[in-house]
Image 1 (cartoon, rainbow, N blue to C red):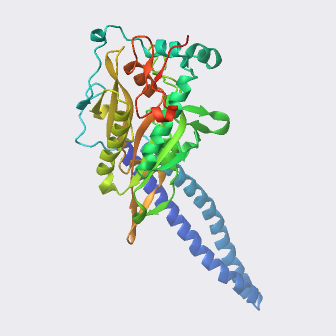
Image 2: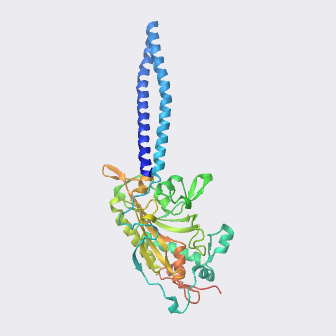
Image 3: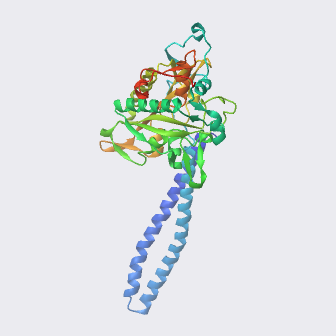
Length: 415
């Protein structure tokens, strides 16, 4: 049977179980209404025959009520169990994809635009160093001690590396606030309901860290906490759109990536990120999606990094996105583009699961949610170091970051 068949069968079973419970409960209520007057009649009976008749009828009803009570409890339990089965099945259902998305798997994306021209290092007379070699020359990245303290895929940013991350964070938040987004510092630990509601306990569950002792999850993106911020709420339509920019540390197990990107800080277990999140009317979701992508482009343009924009194929959308655009920065030493930002239109999918609605006139209905990465460290740092490096191992600082680094124009190697 297909998932749809399973859902239909489970829904039919749940409706039948609920109907049986409702019928038995109604019978129980009718009996209760009969028992009360009989108890009163028994107290008022003046002769033995009337008292005996009332007692017999009352005893019969009480016996019936006792048996019915057990049936009601069993029916309620069955209805609850059937409802849990339906809910569990719905959690495995992905969002409907946008028909404009390219069809296929991870490699079937469509390139929408190239921005900037990758440098010709051969023409400049030197071979580019990769980000890890540059980070070690500058005293900015330490993966050896990261592995010593925490294991593989952990790292330290220090000196210029730490300052660069703080500068990027400040630039991202300054831009977000300038565009009217509310800055947020969000929790990194969330309840299972938040993870389920956003779609991160389905096919993405293998990459999630769980704190079993407390039944909490470490988020892989502040999208989870931002989406859950208005869970179980009804928002007045006149207040929409609500736009947030959340900063948090993020954690990913990177399951299934054994042997991939083991050098440096491209694929790591912990990183910091500024994530944009929007609650809006469903009919305005596509316009909000375009706006999030425009803000991401504005940020990366300020960093003077060559990149491309891709329309992600249907098989790579994950469970919650109806459509997704990624921005990929050029990484010189790899000779390819790597993802640095992503923005998704999740339509009403997350709002329905998190029970977030909008009050629109005299009715309530689900709203739409969208998310977009404004700045994800450390991949932005990787792209900055490699694209702005110079022959002597120094790294030029883009003009947009210089005021946030005390006017410094470059990072130079340790003496």
